[in-house]
Image 1: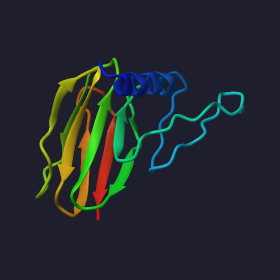
Image 2: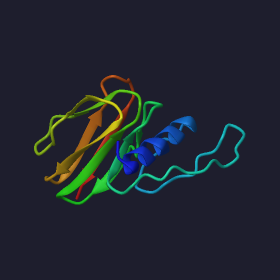
Image 3: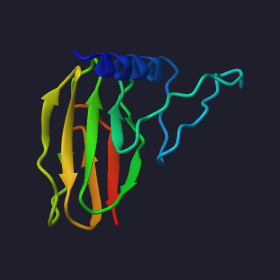
Length: 127
């Protein structure tokens, strides 16, 4: 595993530990149950993390046509199954501890799910 991948998996583990979810392209500052701030987990641009607490982070990613989006997976196995739509990229089989890139060549809204974990949904919006 490359040093960059190790840093990303470490960031994902930290995000899982603090139950960080959320949406959008920017990092958020989650709070603990007592309301105190917890250090944010920064998601690299054009990346969707499949976290070890069974969430996609961000839940919605907006990109321009032709953008490559990297789906990064931690220690828990996940898949990415896209809703049927014209121009949707190929699904991602069950994987862990790796990153997989998909190019979004068509304008539209592309929903996806991890079919292994109920409620684990996301969307890539392509302008």
